[in-house]
Image (cartoon, rainbow over the protein chains, first blue to last red):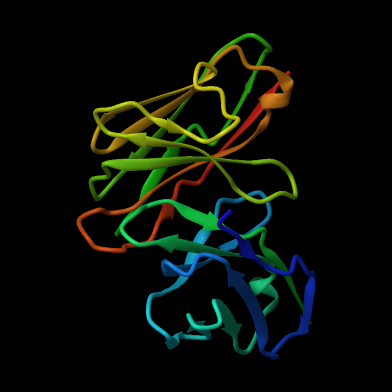
Length: 111
Length: 117
């Protein structure tokens, strides 16, 4: 059973702080890793994707991948109340389109 | 780029009727599209993979005769919920990726909220 695990939260952080969201996956053959943001009642929106070990930065967001530990994380710097949402980690295997989603972590950024 | 359009955004129907949901890739071709369902406060559940020019692949527990999928072109997939019942009320979301680019990410449509009365 291929699984993607996330802490459901909520993760509460003050405005301006760094929010750290974590995800582990079971399939060592996984090749691509994605973070989606989903506001309540809306569909998921792609935030970041990462394929190689290490860090990838895009604005206030940094994705970190450690394939040896089967661990992927998302850091949100200078968190804003508008970042409050559920963050979904998704993992995919080589040469296939089928994403495996985690259950999501709910982030709350309070003023 | 990579915009996925889904229609309608919401629909209310009576028990026993059928509802069709359309999913279009606007600026790319998609040989494969994916249909998800999401109940309140739950994660996305993949229902089926829609394949252009061939039969859809359904996930375990999803009734193929109830959820009819047609992928008639490289830019359009439809999901028809047949003989809908209140327990089919959910948020249905389609997604697709631009298969012209290796490992390109999935993009989601805006979803269709179905309410069966």
